[in-house]
Image 1 (cartoon, one colour):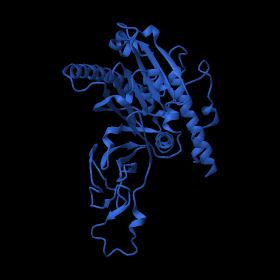
Image 2 (cartoon, one colour; image 1 turned 135 degrees about the horizontal axis):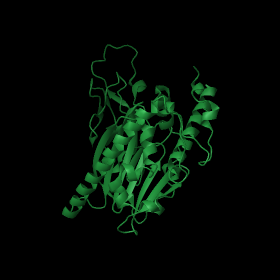
Image 3 (cartoon, rainbow, N blue to C red; image 1 turned 120 degrees about the vertical axis):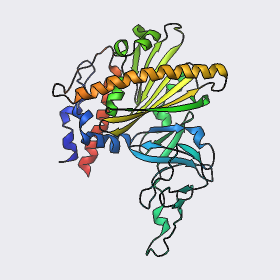
Image 4 (cartoon, rainbow, N blue to C red; image 1 turned 135 degrees about the vertical axis):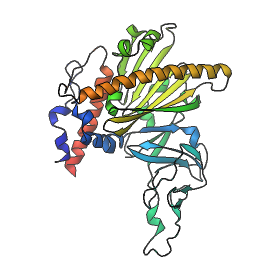
Length: 363
């Protein structure tokens, strides 16, 4: 089967919100679409890895997953940010297994091959009798990496627009909050038994708030909930019930990064596909104050509330995944009032699939 036969032209047409249908259920349940998502959609776009403070100086490192592959970022001897696949060129062992730390050089945890921070192979134990072996041929594979507002991103395919272009307009909208001046607090993660696109769809609409998140719905002014769409991201925002001068901002940056912004707090969600029907959602928390007793209490309360909301989302997303496998469902329609963000995401996804089809035909 040719790759582009997965995508009949009629399925890739982007129709106006008022006329559009949702994407087919197979795009959430079929392994072939999951493979395209990882090796093309994710591969060619920026993915959040973690806080830049974890790679602040030479030898600092941070690990993560990008496009389904393990990656590691560090600073070399010249202070340059470097990103590699966290994979030894000997037999695929891990260079690091911890989330973050400090090293003098990278050493495979399987057989001890060592690499300099510039990615070149330095030490190869017990290889004296191996013929025609040149260490220069076995350096680490680099990736494109950059930092925006204290956050580290990688773009494995190397072809995405600069981060400044992707995030254009966000800083001005959320001012006076400056994400780069917030302090990293902690990380939490959840495994959700659904396709990554189910989780994203759910995030991108407030339609479900009254039924799924009544406590959150009580905190926000649901009647004033708005969605705006841009070239590379969408924004949902609403004022708080108690103080309308403060707003909650929910940014989705295609394909898998979410910024949840409240006064004095940034929560980042990285949506990591694990399999066709399993997704890991990583939550990184940043606050304006993480040390005072009052701040610690606020952080505890904030994260307890966020955890309750997350489990509500997990339950409904897992039910939706079951529904998408049913013979009773293939496509639905959009609420013009409440699902503009979902429609926008699915348009961007179709755009990526169109690029995949075009490139597949050229191979």
